[in-house]
Length: 575
Image 1 (cartoon, rainbow, N blue to C red):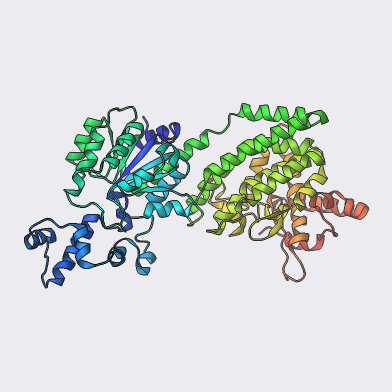
Image 2: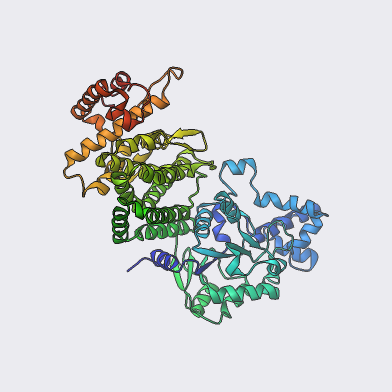
């Protein structure tokens, strides 16, 4: 049996955009946002203080005794501030964080808001209904660059696009915190304007529903809208801490909903997003589709008459890979080791179908055919351009380019097309922080500049590796070359040649006398001293015989003599 969260995740992933969310105050509780009623009672205390009274433990009762009616949010603001601008200044401190609150992480988007924002950005959730009037969900969406339609009053409904065309939409049923018309009292919550009711009827009829953080006790009009929904074609889930209250139980029974016990909104939505991501990762293209693409590539590469078909095949595969990567749309705003590992795994899964094609293309392409791959790898590399945030997460956007780069270069090495490696390694791309040669910026030891390859230790399978980035590349290349390279010795020798050649290229292009330091990227070959020293010895002899036409110089794209002495000095002992 699946647990409830997994069941919801499967249904949301299978029916992308089928569910709407209904969020109550419980979703913003961990952000320390007061409810509308909390704010109303505090305003009552202020009014009492202005009259020289003490509202006591029951401000609502004091107000009813003093004014003969229940407290009304809008009327209280009119008493305390005479203009719209002043009224906003009264309300802002309840919702917007002070410097001290911001430092404590209060009144800011929570894990729940960010997970929901990611679900909306990826199209799993198109509509969010909320009784909250804070802007935290809008802020979470803005952090990842998503524009959202906000409907906070009946006036907004008239000017809004139909939901089918509107994109991500938030419906604030109680209004927005900067609008004095927010709903608080039982009278205000007993009915909606016709335009809002019509919108709710449409949503409850056309979408499944996931309810979280809402008790169902006071919102009479909202309960009525759920009750009158004419169909039950889509499921309803009600997530709550503890047993649902009586009003919720009645709605669950009438709606045929399923109650889901949760520890809190943050954990629930974060887990839901992770489960959906895991399901997506399992939906990689079937291996047969990759095999067919590789077979077509092999058919098209040898003959000039197939060049148009080759172009169409590759641009189609490149487009699909970019669609997969663009669909991930990860946040780079805050650092979390688990988030780094999750993003790396998703990027790897989205890139995986391309790697056998890249390896095959490296083995069999001529220089002109390789230009398509050069341009595409540069395009992948430049995906970090224009982003700011946590350096490791921004740099990780170029990780797919590294994987494709290594697969193509390894294929070229195995196929004996060494000039293709040097040409690709020297190609310049704009990474947003400067223009660098692909062979240097995409080297697995340098692609994540914030901490280098050690960041890959955060991946479960590489936590105990001495050079986790190099081991990751080794496992990736072993998978795509196993039908060509038989035996571990042949593979290790070939990978050592590639990693060492890239290191010599890096040593020429990235080090200079002015910098006062020297570094050549290490690889797993570093711990096979016999292999390392033997290969350098062979390359020294080859360079003395053929100079810049030697294998090392051609593979590394060198324009100057290889820096054998400095490289050997650095690699003399494993670190």
